[in-house]
Length: 356
Image 1: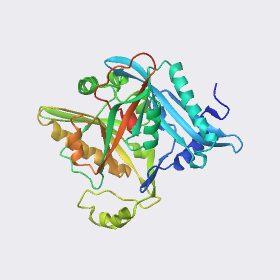
Image 2: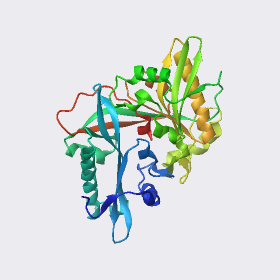
Image 3: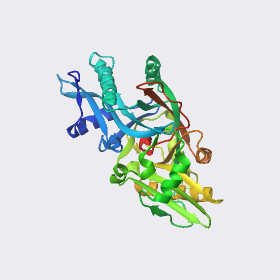
Image 4: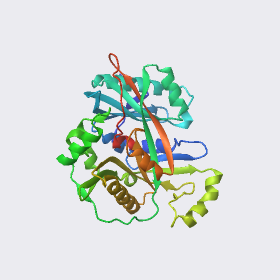
């Protein structure tokens, strides 16, 4: 049973949850806040989501939220059900108050939900410089870090010239599914659903995910494209002084040099994600780079500012994508095993649903 201040979120809470999201910016000198048209869009990508809200009953105000979803993944080659935390936030007005203690109750309630749905583990991504969450993980010794996700951003600044137009691959294409499994099937946390179909039906229903392929001679390449900027963006609350000074300079030379658009405070940044990188044949990497140009053009069409990829550090595509990146953000993947001894974890698969 949930404590009195906690309840399960409903679609009617969407506006209040979006307001809570805007009220919880991240960063110090560079302060940014996430914005989603539909707060629940990310959780629904997994097909089974659970969101709890903490409510100030006296003011009828939502001041906290915690969201999670389930998915079946391979760990050590064995299918396991895991619960993935998607969100955890408390309104600044309520931090260090008596009511804020209900968020610990929400965390415990989410753990009970995970056990109730038969999950083997609870997992979540934490930004490596998030000291508060890292300290919390340190206090909860049952949680341990088992993987890394490095996010890289490339500037979207002008249309790329393509030698040929790529073909869109239908979801569940057996040839591509086999190649996907050959590339990523030995990694831990790869979703079992991707063996059969990528993107999944839930992902495809959004209209945001697609897969593209180029063939030339005896070579080929494929990538997935996630057009996240259509449904979510990052609002810039404040920028440091050196960004303010650089903005007019960047704007002047960006037509010839790949530099990012620096928004004014109050402006937004949009992202297009690329994932599931695949190549074959001697010219495979050259075709993959052409596909990145296609993704760049898609981002331009959507008004996105950055082309973003996320990689395990051991990924063979990581060094090449990193050479064209403006910056990198390091995340750690934490896991609590719920019963018995946890299995050893190998290279981590970056689920495109986790990138948003």
